Amino acid sequence: MSAQDWGDQRIEIIIGALLRTGVTLAAAVVFCGAVVYFARHGGGVPNYAVFHGEPENLKSVSAIVHGALGMSGSAIIQLGLLLLIATPVARVLFSAIAFALERDYLYTFITLIVLGILLYSLFLASG
Image (cartoon, rainbow, N blue to C red; front, side, top):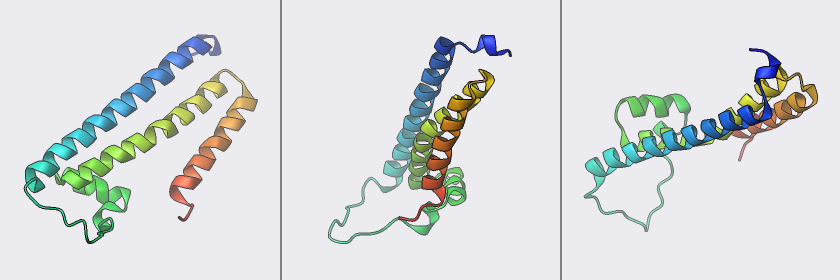
C-alpha cells in the first residue's frame, strides 16, 4: 500500500473503527464475565466490613487468560478490562505505523515516545 492510500480522513476512519471495536469487544467480554460471575456467585452476600484484595490468579496476564479459558467469571471480567486498556495502546501503535507509512518521521518519533511512555507505565512503573 502506498503512502498516497493513507490519507488523513482514511486514517481517522480506521482509528475510529479501531476504538469502537476495542471498546465494544471489551464491554461484551465484561458483560459475559458478569453473567458467568452472577450465575455462579449471585446468591452470595458480600461482606463489606472486610477488604479482600485482588486474588493472585488475577494479577498477571497469563493467569487471567488461563482463568478466562477456564470460565472464571472474575477472570473474564479482568480480561475485558485488559482489552479496554489495550484499545488506546493499539490506537497509538496504529498511529505510529500510519505516520511511518506517510513518511512523517517527526510524528512517528513523537508517537513512538508516547507509546513507550504508555508501555512503561503499564509494565514497568511501580505503584
